[in-house]
Picture (cartoon, rainbow, N blue to C red):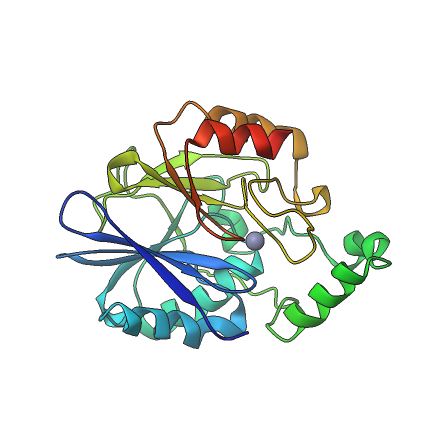
Length: 250
Ligand SMILES: [Zn+2]
C-alpha cells in the first residue's frame, strides 16, 4: 500500500517526466536543471511516500520549486499539504479551484454519496483501504495561489495548464514534455479501486461534481496532440489520446 512504481520519460528538452503510480492514486514529478515541479501529492498518509518518490529520482523536497494541483480532493492534496508545509514551496491551482484547495468550500463525495454503492464488495473493500490513508481528512492548503501567468508556466518542466472542469469546477490537466504527455488528473482515468474496468474511463458519477461538464472537457482533450496520458488513478496510457477519449466516453 505504501509502495510505488515510477515510469520516466524524456521531456524532449533535457529534463524528465516521472509518473509515480501507487495502488490508489498517482502524482507526477517534472525534473530539469532548475529543479522539480510536483503535480498533486497523494493521500494525507502518503506524504512520506511523496518524499520517497523524490529520493528515487535523486531529488529531495528541497528541490521542489512549486506544486501544481489538478483538483482539491483529499487523495490529491492530502500528502502534498504536509510536504508543502514542511518545505515551504508555493502551491498553484486553476483560479477557479483555488478556493476549493483552501477549503472555502468542498466539492467532494462524502460517505452519504457513496452509501448507495456500499452493497458492492469492491466499493466496501476500497473504502476500507483508503480509510487508513486519511480519506476523511478535510484540511485544505491555505497558501494556494492561482497560476502565476497564463499559458505555459515558468517552472521546472514548463507545464501548460489545460482547463478541464467537471470533476470539480476548477479541475486542471497539464500538458508536459512539449505537449505530447497529458497529466489528466481525475477528468480521465485508467483504473480505480471501485471500477472493474481496466483502461481509459471516467470515474463513477458519484465522484464528479458535474458529470456532463466533465464529459465535455474529456471530449475536448481528443483534439490534443498527445500520445501518453498520466492519469490520477490507474496506470499510464500509451497511444493516441483520441482513442483513450473514445473509450472513456463509450
Ligand atoms: Zn482522485
